[in-house]
Length: 295
Image (cartoon, rainbow, N blue to C red; front, top):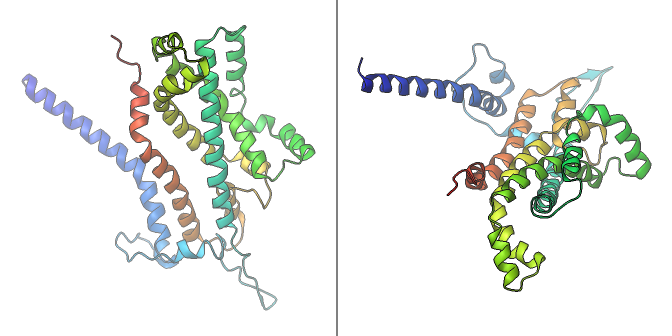
Protein backbone atom coordinates (compact mmCIF):
# COMPACT_ATOMS: atom_id res chain seq x y z
CA UNK A 1 0.00 0.00 0.00
CA UNK A 2 1.54 3.26 -1.12
CA UNK A 3 1.40 6.60 0.68
CA UNK A 4 -1.59 7.83 -1.36
CA UNK A 5 -3.68 4.76 -0.52
CA UNK A 6 -2.81 4.97 3.18
CA UNK A 7 -3.81 8.62 3.28
CA UNK A 8 -7.05 7.86 1.43
CA UNK A 9 -7.89 5.04 3.84
CA UNK A 10 -7.12 7.28 6.82
CA UNK A 11 -9.40 10.02 5.49
CA UNK A 12 -12.21 7.51 4.90
CA UNK A 13 -11.91 6.25 8.47
CA UNK A 14 -12.04 9.82 9.78
CA UNK A 15 -15.16 10.53 7.69
CA UNK A 16 -16.88 7.39 9.01
CA UNK A 17 -16.04 8.32 12.61
CA UNK A 18 -17.38 11.85 12.10
CA UNK A 19 -20.58 10.51 10.56
CA UNK A 20 -21.10 8.18 13.52
CA UNK A 21 -20.55 11.10 15.92
CA UNK A 22 -23.06 13.24 14.00
CA UNK A 23 -25.66 10.47 14.08
CA UNK A 24 -25.19 9.94 17.81
CA UNK A 25 -25.40 13.70 18.42
CA UNK A 26 -28.40 14.51 16.22
CA UNK A 27 -30.47 11.36 16.70
CA UNK A 28 -31.95 12.52 20.06
CA UNK A 29 -32.96 15.81 18.41
CA UNK A 30 -34.55 13.91 15.54
CA UNK A 31 -36.40 11.61 17.97
CA UNK A 32 -37.59 14.59 20.00
CA UNK A 33 -38.92 16.31 16.87
CA UNK A 34 -40.57 13.13 15.60
CA UNK A 35 -42.30 12.56 18.94
CA UNK A 36 -43.49 16.16 18.98
CA UNK A 37 -44.99 15.91 15.49
CA UNK A 38 -46.62 12.48 15.86
CA UNK A 39 -49.94 11.49 17.35
CA UNK A 40 -49.85 9.61 20.65
CA UNK A 41 -50.48 6.29 18.89
CA UNK A 42 -47.71 6.94 16.37
CA UNK A 43 -45.25 8.04 19.06
CA UNK A 44 -45.68 4.79 21.02
CA UNK A 45 -45.99 2.45 18.05
CA UNK A 46 -43.62 -0.50 17.82
CA UNK A 47 -41.75 -0.87 15.62
CA UNK A 48 -41.33 2.92 15.34
CA UNK A 49 -42.85 4.69 12.36
CA UNK A 50 -40.02 6.29 10.39
CA UNK A 51 -42.37 7.91 7.89
CA UNK A 52 -45.33 9.87 9.24
CA UNK A 53 -47.46 12.89 8.49
CA UNK A 54 -46.18 15.73 10.72
CA UNK A 55 -48.75 17.50 12.87
CA UNK A 56 -48.32 20.63 15.00
CA UNK A 57 -51.01 19.89 17.59
CA UNK A 58 -48.50 19.37 20.39
CA UNK A 59 -46.78 22.70 19.68
CA UNK A 60 -50.17 24.42 19.89
CA UNK A 61 -51.49 22.54 22.89
CA UNK A 62 -48.41 23.07 25.04
CA UNK A 63 -49.31 26.76 25.22
CA UNK A 64 -52.92 25.90 26.10
CA UNK A 65 -52.97 22.84 28.35
CA UNK A 66 -49.31 22.54 29.32
CA UNK A 67 -47.34 19.29 29.39
CA UNK A 68 -49.95 17.32 31.33
CA UNK A 69 -52.66 15.31 29.67
CA UNK A 70 -56.21 14.56 30.73
CA UNK A 71 -56.22 13.01 34.20
CA UNK A 72 -59.26 10.79 33.66
CA UNK A 73 -62.28 10.63 35.96
CA UNK A 74 -62.42 10.52 39.74
CA UNK A 75 -65.85 9.58 41.18
CA UNK A 76 -67.46 10.44 37.88
CA UNK A 77 -65.85 13.88 37.71
CA UNK A 78 -63.46 14.49 34.84
CA UNK A 79 -60.15 15.84 36.12
CA UNK A 80 -58.64 18.31 33.68
CA UNK A 81 -55.09 19.63 33.72
CA UNK A 82 -54.30 23.14 34.88
CA UNK A 83 -54.00 25.87 32.24
CA UNK A 84 -50.58 25.93 30.65
CA UNK A 85 -47.78 27.82 32.36
CA UNK A 86 -45.31 27.06 29.57
CA UNK A 87 -45.80 30.40 27.82
CA UNK A 88 -44.86 32.30 30.99
CA UNK A 89 -42.00 29.92 31.74
CA UNK A 90 -40.60 30.18 28.21
CA UNK A 91 -40.77 33.98 28.41
CA UNK A 92 -39.00 33.87 31.78
CA UNK A 93 -36.25 31.71 30.29
CA UNK A 94 -35.64 34.17 27.47
CA UNK A 95 -35.67 37.30 29.66
CA UNK A 96 -33.59 35.85 32.51
CA UNK A 97 -31.04 34.00 30.35
CA UNK A 98 -30.35 36.76 27.85
CA UNK A 99 -30.27 39.54 30.47
CA UNK A 100 -27.88 37.67 32.75
CA UNK A 101 -25.72 36.70 29.76
CA UNK A 102 -25.38 40.32 28.66
CA UNK A 103 -24.57 41.50 32.19
CA UNK A 104 -22.07 38.72 32.93
CA UNK A 105 -20.31 39.16 29.58
CA UNK A 106 -20.08 42.96 29.83
CA UNK A 107 -18.93 42.95 33.46
CA UNK A 108 -16.49 40.15 32.67
CA UNK A 109 -15.06 42.19 29.78
CA UNK A 110 -14.50 45.24 32.00
CA UNK A 111 -12.99 43.13 34.79
CA UNK A 112 -10.80 41.23 32.35
CA UNK A 113 -9.48 44.49 30.94
CA UNK A 114 -8.64 45.81 34.42
CA UNK A 115 -6.85 42.63 35.48
CA UNK A 116 -4.95 42.46 32.19
CA UNK A 117 -3.90 46.07 31.78
CA UNK A 118 -3.73 47.68 35.22
CA UNK A 119 -1.55 46.96 38.25
CA UNK A 120 -3.98 45.36 40.71
CA UNK A 121 -2.73 44.66 44.22
CA UNK A 122 -3.14 41.00 45.08
CA UNK A 123 -4.12 40.18 41.49
CA UNK A 124 -3.34 36.46 41.73
CA UNK A 125 -5.22 36.10 45.01
CA UNK A 126 -8.26 37.93 43.65
CA UNK A 127 -8.31 35.79 40.53
CA UNK A 128 -8.11 32.66 42.67
CA UNK A 129 -11.03 33.86 44.79
CA UNK A 130 -13.05 34.57 41.63
CA UNK A 131 -12.23 31.15 40.23
CA UNK A 132 -13.04 29.41 43.52
CA UNK A 133 -16.63 30.60 43.22
CA UNK A 134 -17.05 27.97 40.48
CA UNK A 135 -15.48 25.15 42.47
CA UNK A 136 -18.55 24.37 44.56
CA UNK A 137 -21.56 22.73 42.89
CA UNK A 138 -24.73 24.84 43.10
CA UNK A 139 -26.55 22.34 45.31
CA UNK A 140 -23.95 22.86 48.09
CA UNK A 141 -24.85 26.54 48.53
CA UNK A 142 -28.52 26.16 47.59
CA UNK A 143 -29.98 26.17 51.12
CA UNK A 144 -28.24 29.34 52.41
CA UNK A 145 -29.00 31.10 49.13
CA UNK A 146 -32.70 30.20 49.39
CA UNK A 147 -32.81 31.52 52.98
CA UNK A 148 -31.01 34.73 51.96
CA UNK A 149 -33.31 35.26 48.97
CA UNK A 150 -36.43 34.84 51.10
CA UNK A 151 -35.10 37.33 53.64
CA UNK A 152 -34.27 39.89 50.93
CA UNK A 153 -37.54 39.44 49.03
CA UNK A 154 -35.78 38.13 45.94
CA UNK A 155 -37.38 34.68 46.00
CA UNK A 156 -39.51 33.90 42.95
CA UNK A 157 -38.49 37.06 41.08
CA UNK A 158 -36.85 37.44 37.71
CA UNK A 159 -34.41 39.95 39.16
CA UNK A 160 -33.26 37.49 41.80
CA UNK A 161 -32.53 34.79 39.25
CA UNK A 162 -30.77 37.29 36.98
CA UNK A 163 -28.50 38.34 39.86
CA UNK A 164 -27.69 34.70 40.68
CA UNK A 165 -26.91 33.75 37.08
CA UNK A 166 -24.82 36.89 36.53
CA UNK A 167 -22.74 36.13 39.62
CA UNK A 168 -22.53 32.45 38.67
CA UNK A 169 -21.17 33.18 35.17
CA UNK A 170 -19.00 36.15 36.09
CA UNK A 171 -15.98 34.07 37.10
CA UNK A 172 -15.98 32.25 33.76
CA UNK A 173 -16.39 35.54 31.90
CA UNK A 174 -13.50 37.21 33.72
CA UNK A 175 -11.07 34.39 33.04
CA UNK A 176 -12.13 34.12 29.41
CA UNK A 177 -11.82 37.85 28.78
CA UNK A 178 -8.43 38.16 30.46
CA UNK A 179 -6.96 35.80 27.86
CA UNK A 180 -8.56 37.78 25.02
CA UNK A 181 -7.38 41.16 26.34
CA UNK A 182 -3.85 39.81 26.80
CA UNK A 183 -3.74 39.11 23.05
CA UNK A 184 -4.69 42.68 22.10
CA UNK A 185 -1.53 44.77 21.50
CA UNK A 186 -0.99 47.43 24.13
CA UNK A 187 0.29 49.76 21.44
CA UNK A 188 -3.34 50.61 20.54
CA UNK A 189 -3.94 52.23 23.91
CA UNK A 190 -0.50 53.76 24.18
CA UNK A 191 -0.93 55.51 20.83
CA UNK A 192 -4.39 56.70 21.86
CA UNK A 193 -3.11 58.05 25.18
CA UNK A 194 -0.31 59.90 23.39
CA UNK A 195 -2.93 61.48 21.09
CA UNK A 196 -4.77 62.85 24.10
CA UNK A 197 -7.44 60.23 24.70
CA UNK A 198 -8.32 59.34 28.27
CA UNK A 199 -8.02 55.74 29.44
CA UNK A 200 -11.80 55.43 29.29
CA UNK A 201 -11.98 56.83 25.75
CA UNK A 202 -9.08 54.66 24.57
CA UNK A 203 -10.78 51.56 25.93
CA UNK A 204 -14.15 52.08 24.25
CA UNK A 205 -12.75 53.44 20.97
CA UNK A 206 -9.83 51.09 20.31
CA UNK A 207 -9.82 48.11 22.71
CA UNK A 208 -13.50 47.33 23.10
CA UNK A 209 -14.08 46.72 19.34
CA UNK A 210 -11.24 44.19 19.40
CA UNK A 211 -12.79 42.47 22.41
CA UNK A 212 -16.12 41.84 20.68
CA UNK A 213 -14.91 38.54 19.25
CA UNK A 214 -14.02 37.28 22.70
CA UNK A 215 -17.22 38.65 24.17
CA UNK A 216 -19.28 36.82 21.54
CA UNK A 217 -17.58 33.51 22.32
CA UNK A 218 -18.00 34.10 26.06
CA UNK A 219 -21.65 35.08 25.63
CA UNK A 220 -22.46 31.83 23.80
CA UNK A 221 -21.09 29.71 26.64
CA UNK A 222 -22.78 31.92 29.26
CA UNK A 223 -26.13 31.59 27.52
CA UNK A 224 -25.84 27.81 27.19
CA UNK A 225 -24.97 27.41 30.88
CA UNK A 226 -27.75 29.77 31.99
CA UNK A 227 -30.37 28.39 29.60
CA UNK A 228 -29.79 24.82 30.78
CA UNK A 229 -29.39 25.61 34.49
CA UNK A 230 -31.76 23.61 36.67
CA UNK A 231 -30.89 23.78 40.38
CA UNK A 232 -31.31 27.50 41.07
CA UNK A 233 -34.18 27.77 38.58
CA UNK A 234 -36.04 25.17 40.64
CA UNK A 235 -35.11 26.20 44.20
CA UNK A 236 -35.23 30.01 43.87
CA UNK A 237 -38.55 30.29 42.04
CA UNK A 238 -42.22 29.51 42.51
CA UNK A 239 -44.98 30.00 39.98
CA UNK A 240 -44.08 33.50 38.82
CA UNK A 241 -40.40 33.35 37.85
CA UNK A 242 -39.98 29.65 37.08
CA UNK A 243 -38.19 28.94 33.83
CA UNK A 244 -39.12 26.30 31.27
CA UNK A 245 -36.47 23.69 32.09
CA UNK A 246 -37.69 22.88 35.63
CA UNK A 247 -41.26 23.46 34.46
CA UNK A 248 -40.96 20.68 31.90
CA UNK A 249 -39.12 18.42 34.33
CA UNK A 250 -41.80 18.81 36.99
CA UNK A 251 -44.48 17.61 34.60
CA UNK A 252 -42.71 14.25 34.33
CA UNK A 253 -43.88 13.35 37.81
CA UNK A 254 -47.56 14.10 37.24
CA UNK A 255 -50.30 11.72 36.16
CA UNK A 256 -51.32 11.66 32.54
CA UNK A 257 -48.02 12.91 31.12
CA UNK A 258 -48.31 13.91 27.47
CA UNK A 259 -44.96 12.95 26.00
CA UNK A 260 -45.75 14.62 22.69
CA UNK A 261 -46.17 18.00 24.36
CA UNK A 262 -43.07 17.47 26.49
CA UNK A 263 -41.09 16.71 23.32
CA UNK A 264 -42.56 19.83 21.70
CA UNK A 265 -41.55 21.99 24.65
CA UNK A 266 -38.06 20.48 24.72
CA UNK A 267 -37.65 21.10 21.00
CA UNK A 268 -38.75 24.72 21.40
CA UNK A 269 -36.13 25.13 24.13
CA UNK A 270 -33.41 24.17 21.66
CA UNK A 271 -34.33 26.82 19.07
CA UNK A 272 -33.23 30.09 20.83
CA UNK A 273 -29.78 28.73 21.68
CA UNK A 274 -29.31 27.40 18.14
CA UNK A 275 -30.30 30.79 16.66
CA UNK A 276 -28.03 32.70 19.05
CA UNK A 277 -25.09 30.38 18.33
CA UNK A 278 -25.72 30.57 14.58
CA UNK A 279 -25.74 34.38 14.64
CA UNK A 280 -22.48 34.51 16.59
CA UNK A 281 -20.94 31.37 15.11
CA UNK A 282 -18.27 33.20 13.11
CA UNK A 283 -17.22 35.11 16.20
CA UNK A 284 -17.05 31.85 18.15
CA UNK A 285 -14.57 30.35 15.68
CA UNK A 286 -12.56 33.58 15.52
CA UNK A 287 -12.63 33.71 19.30
CA UNK A 288 -11.06 30.27 19.60
CA UNK A 289 -8.29 31.19 17.16
CA UNK A 290 -7.79 34.77 18.36
CA UNK A 291 -4.17 35.38 19.17
CA UNK A 292 -3.13 31.91 18.02
CA UNK A 293 -0.78 33.27 15.33
CA UNK A 294 1.97 35.54 16.53
CA UNK A 295 4.29 37.52 14.33
